[in-house]
Length: 339
Picture 1: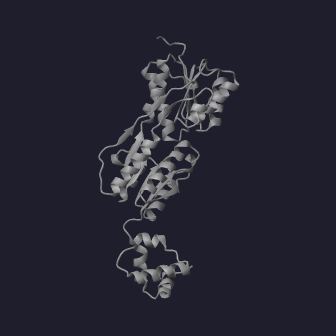
Picture 2: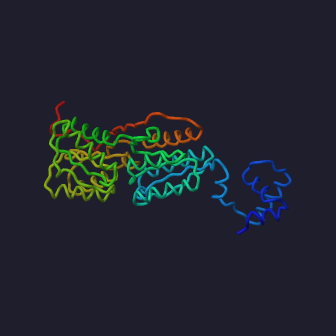
């Protein structure tokens, strides 16, 4: 592999001149610039990005950390689509680092992007605690923004939707329709989102003085198959329920399939609500009602806020986004409905 010294010799200039051409800083005559560019092309020289990044103030790169367990989900697709498009519009490069399977992996991914001297970093965390993220943000001068988690010490560095409130809203809607026996499929309970949505379910029942029946609660794994399995578990337990809330649409789709196979009509026998309003939701049979999370808006706010920070802007408050129910054919009035 060619070195910068070989480029300099071939172009008949100093190493410093080659460096100025590569960085775009400092005066170089047009003639010498052309000699350097020709020498680079002929030698196949590729700049050492790490060394280059150390020498300049801005790398025009933004880092993104996401654990790979989220790669197949709808949220990851939206996150990547909007992040890449907005970075392209800004003339910046997006660098993805895998958060893998533990808090230590997520921390290592963040450090990897810091070592590359990314101008800023966005984290969609699963394993790092609130305290750990607050500490990481406080220790580094590069802005590090967090999506979908509420921080305690760095209010302006987080953008999130209240998952507990959203889940409670779904359950309250079913209660308003006359449902009392409401089953719930959780997400993975090692996930903060999974825990918050379960908490919202319980709080909504308690608020309406409906006793929580633990036999109505089944742990899912965010997959359609775990929605299928959850319905089997509920039926084996002999539980009667007129409504079912699944913590994401993939599990709700699996539940719809299994209920149909068991000749349990949706929505006349069981109403079903999911979360996230995935593109498939309007096309299931019956069409799936879902709590639409403002993912696109959250991503755009995160990137706009990060870019503003890089330009010297400041923010003082958290921004909380709210979800909305997209009511479709999978829900109807329950046995205790009183118009």
